[in-house]
Length: 441
Image (cartoon, rainbow, N blue to C red; front, side, top):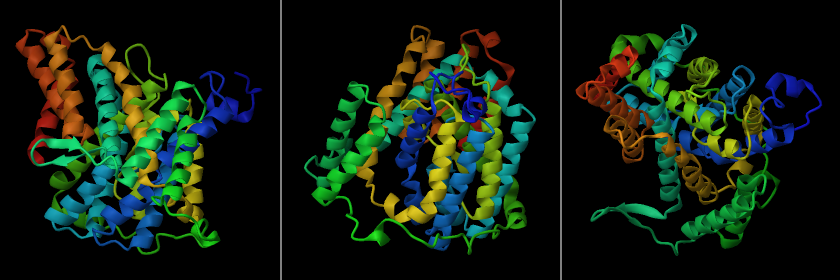
């Protein structure tokens, strides 16, 4: 694949990773569109509910996403997009400012301190030691579990699967216009994928959005004001408003430990799964540059708290860009620049309905489940932990909770089977840590 030894080729190792500038840009565009919904969902459903001013919270989400994604792209050379996490956003709103009764300034202080902890763990190589200690079978299970989890999110977001009192889950109303639009989008993307069309997700999302406008499901722009804003929103009311001392005074263990554990393992799980899909891991399932990704994650959590955002983490939607061929940090740089542009194009991003992006999440499950072939289900001491890791992610709607059950059970069954020597000593520490985490929920 010819890149003419350009600056971008040398900086991002495009030729070495068998990719091109065009492919990386398409991948970055795809990732941005797949996760652009956070621009509206995180401020509207989480931060404003916690009492934060909506306009400033929206700007904080956009800026923290742009900064963190550019950082992991330039520093880590990884095709990973970052932004305020949905699970972490829910924790920020419904746990910290909800059940714990903290104000949002104190909650931001807790996010800041947890970012400091994550950064220290990364620069001291403790995170690398943790990742090296995780057996390959569990790394494969993490990828499969994440795939099923995000696919389930896609089906629920589309309305194809709904809650049911009698059977927990049931088939939704397929005649509902929004659900029907998602099904149409799914068909379009599947056809494009089957024919190996480059940019299948991006083309599919655009086509589905246009069809949605015709169906009346997606808003139709009525003028330039519905497409572009000439005065970008800034986090005037949230920037620098974090209260670090109040967070520490409330109880550093009860607040910050929980945030740190969830963010650390959400990051590890996502980085491993997405990078594996990009072919960046070695024969042992390790990602050579993962520590840079984790350092970027720690810095991003700190900066995000300063802007006025809940904890920033790696995003599962990065897998959509990887599926389009993204293999380097140029994918992330593209996504990060698009987030900056979103300060001016917020109305345009709002034209893409959730029904148009849900099919991407559905298909990602099919693309990521292949890792299950690396699990030896004939060995119960591998099968049970892998199964629990995989099944508990979608059932609990949490990557870290799925990993908790998997890691704890791995140590228990290996010791019970007389295979304690197969367990890395760090895995015992992780199992105890996860037990504490579960007890603190």
